[in-house]
Image 1 (cartoon, rainbow over the protein chains, first blue to last red):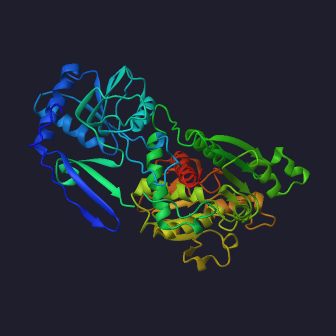
Image 2 (image 1 turned 120 degrees about the horizontal axis):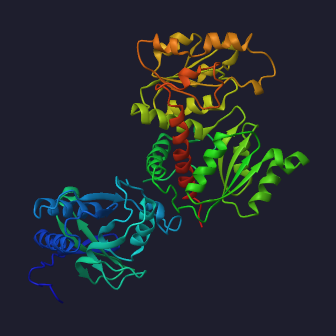
Image 3 (image 1 turned 180 degrees about the vertical axis):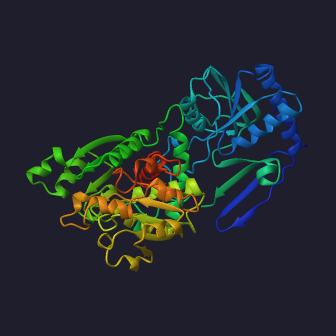
Length: 205
Length: 309
């Protein structure tokens, strides 16, 4: 596949057998690869938004905020972009699976200290899967005004698994993962390492 | 995030401390929501809520209705004064008739203590008690504690005095339960005739001297004298009550610390507090009203999340 070096991706597979389930995980991206991708994404953003004077970045809670913060740091420190407006958007109250899920939905903090009216908004999230979170975010952002346009940036794009017609404008890496697999993005500030795993959790019958 | 330990909010006495913290954390998010340019979220768009008010109410009813609408619930309102209750219909019949219109949740105020508990055992809907006689008014106590937490950072360890007509007050009882559960020190203050006989058995202090009570406390929650519930005379005159138990600016200024003044409303200005106290910067009365919407949104949201499809 394009851009994928099998030697570079060490397939560190281990199996933990507990009860009747087996779990294996594989490294999709290591910290060097993540660093390179973040710089590329930052450059692509600059290409389209120049000095960011009319652009705001919105990290989608809970996991998109780390990527949004990283990109903001790179834009400010390595590419001297000043005054980037960064906000966090929580989509819990806009989700379409309220009362339909066994798992209790946990709300996070929304922090948007600016108006998005007539701004170019870039949604930032770690993994794009079914597209339902982004659907909720598209509704949620309307509470803060009418943006001129909305773009989507994701680190991992799980293609062929979309439930809705939503595609990213900027993507770090495309991944073909089947539904029972899970993509987990770890960030050093939260999880102690920069790493993307493909976790295969399969229940034996 | 966990979920509430109860399926109905009938009184604070049925809640755990974790429930209260969960409600407050959820209310923090809703407080942010109601300060946005567009103050509405779509969470409860498939939930219908009936507000049944068998007793008069202004701010509680408005606050509940606003909270429900900001969560996108469908709302129907019912006031006993304009209904078939006057024609002799029983409570269960009234509510079952409303429920057959496919209502998921009932917010009820009723003059009889225990009306909410009774309803929860007999009808299939989530019940929120919006005040049952002189028993409990749980959402008021929650918003009071939430306002104290917002103003002072924490409720635990704070000294809180509830002043006034404790005997007829559901706000007092719910507040005592809520504050004790969160680890606050609670006293009540008022004329002996307006303090229930066994009030000390709740593990709280009793003070009949207002100045001493104010010197002790961090927060004073001033209650209204509920003349409409008094069939006999409990004190010689309103003027004498105001002199003994009314908080004035002069009294507040003579204390060696700045205490927080609360009032659940409606205020009888010049009786339990004077106008200059109600409108002073020590008063958080209007914050209580704003927080009321956020806290009620949290309660409704958390209870609705337990209604299975």
